[in-house]
Image (cartoon, rainbow, N blue to C red; front, side):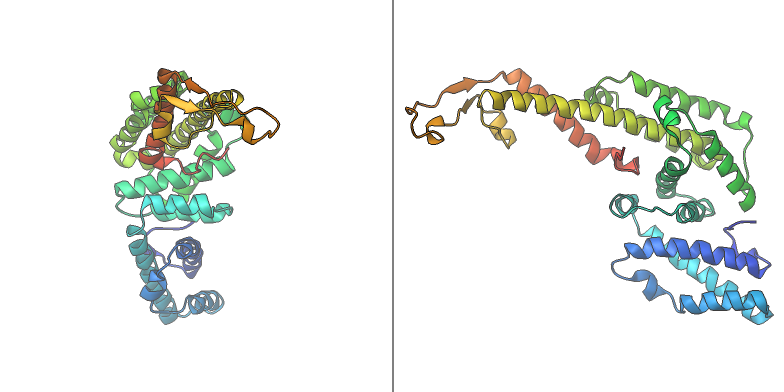
Length: 330
């Protein structure tokens, strides 16, 4: 048996060692952004001594010592769960983006930590969404899966194994068939989107979030999580392509203005100006007869199209892309 949620029911010291390793991984992750040292302050015992006691008890089991170990492990988990309850999804995502986790066992331990919570809130669902997507992408997605926007069967098999080891209930395919179909349809619709504006107008991200919320506890099933990872990666790829296309269009527009010697504007107010002065070339070439700067009228409609396109990007990044765990890393 692997890691388990209910520490108080584990009958054997070897299970305590397994749970020690799990909590140690989660502790390492959480303390990395525990700037006020809340975890250390809440713990009333030395973790290094707990580790020593666990390994000592493996060699020489003592009933009283084993009971003591169980109590400390239970309290440690409570401390970590308290810290997690005070940690937003955004903060965890920021940790992934800025620091990242290259250790797959640590990622899996973090996933198990959330899966084994008896009651899972919306925050827990979003955190599982974040962690399982990163785990799936790092371990189980090859180039073919990503290009074809397909779920990874290896991820499904791995999650099934984790659930079986944790003795968590796995619902039958019949119970989940309709939900899987809904996610699959939405994933395939993503490839039909042709612009960021279209994605925003159709409220794609809000719609996908609602679908996940409506799943309730079925969201945490291996089959559903596998589909969710495929959906998230597909969304990431489609958004990245659209974003790069928008960025390229803006870059081309600015370059065309530079080629005609129009100064590059840096604020929205400047962009909305109807006239932009050309730089005075006489300042660069003393031998050239000074000429009065010319004025060039810009196509207001084209400029506003660029502005609105980039506003759409900023709005989506600010309000809706919190579920993308990898910061659009390619």
